[in-house]
Length: 208
Ligand SMILES: [Zn+2]
Ligand SMILES: [Zn+2]
Image (cartoon, rainbow, N blue to C red; front, side, top):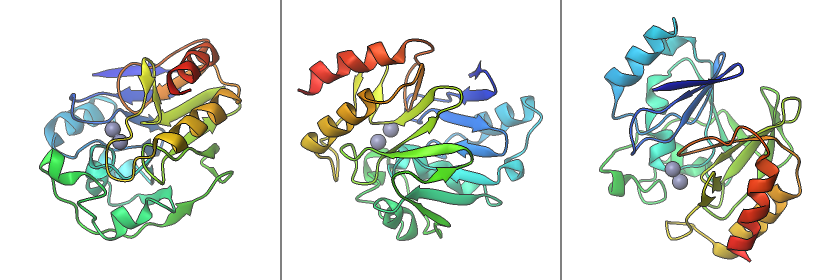
């Protein structure tokens, strides 16, 4: 299923897969990689092929967000420096691959992201807690926050997986609440298309 949010295309292929966001030649998270036919068919319907993708940005190193990276062999990979080892070492513990019954192949990370970096016009907001290297990506011009598994439309991310840290997550939610954005495009579930700051204010009460 696809949804268009301005120039952004949200692809949702199954409950196990992360949301996949397509921005021209850039993809934010790639799902599990289990649903080749579905994803291929969606790309075809959009007049695109996997080889058109030149940049992958992973919001963190969990398998449901990085498992599909292997489809995009023309793409450079960017992920926060603290989750980069998961991709480079095909770390099946920290990626939680066992839980998904999946396997990873080691792959070079081309860009190890840090707080404040700008990639493809998106500002990296470092938001550890769900994993040590979780990031959000802010499009300041269009007031859009891609939030990975740090925060969803209806709650905050879990911290009971490898590398999870409840205190760090609460701080990250507070940090996000201090930023201005209208739209919240999370790693799972439905996006918030207006007044996302109000939603964030509610999240603060969940973590404090
Ligand atoms: Zn996820
Ligand atoms: Zn996750």
